[in-house]
Image (cartoon, rainbow over all chains, first blue to last red; front, side):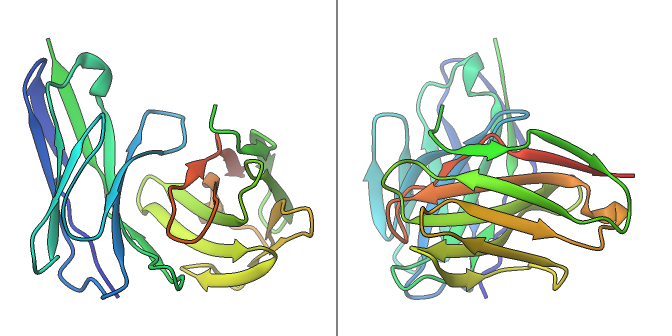
Amino acid sequence: LAKTTQPISMDSYEGQEVNITCSHNNIATNDYITWYQQFPSQGPRFIIQGYKTKVTNEVASLFIPADRKSSTLSLPRVSLSDTAVYYCLVGEGNQGGKLIFGQGTELSVKP
Amino acid sequence: DSGVTQTPKHLITATGQRVTLRCSPRSGDLSVYWYQQSLDQGLQFLIQYYNGEERAKGNILERFSAQQFPDLHSELNLSSLELGDSALYFCASSVSQGAEQFFGPGTRLTVL
């Protein structure tokens, strides 16, 4: 069963690029990697999902090396409103299965 | 607004009691997930249903059960409640397994 590990917290300044890495050494062949953002007292919100290599959307990029034992969420030019907790989620290939969340990375963006 | 609704928003009850949490998925979503979030355990996956059938089980206690009804709404039943069951319970839905999950606002359960 995949166990995920993330840094507990990170600090950044407005306009900087932020990279948050998640380790998932025991990731299964069918597992996808998904990142979510959560603000206090709200449900998590989808950011990006990938299986291997690189995925980019309008808000973030996700880098996954060939061995898939880690993944890095990249947030370009963060703003104060990006202050939140970021979770990586490993699991659920299209066959279903357990979903494992990391413990979350609390990102604090300062002016 | 994710389109996922959960009721009630808050629930306060006593140890030993039983409660039912309700979730209505986004229109068209067939898959429903339940999660528990507490300060010491983080986000824990409990169980997943797809079109009425149980598809995956996580760290769900035997005192907890869930089901998804023909209209696709889901209920999570928590019985013999203990103080440690106090947490935020989230429901999420997706159009299919592996797809982006949309989370509801959560139900905050307090067991006194």
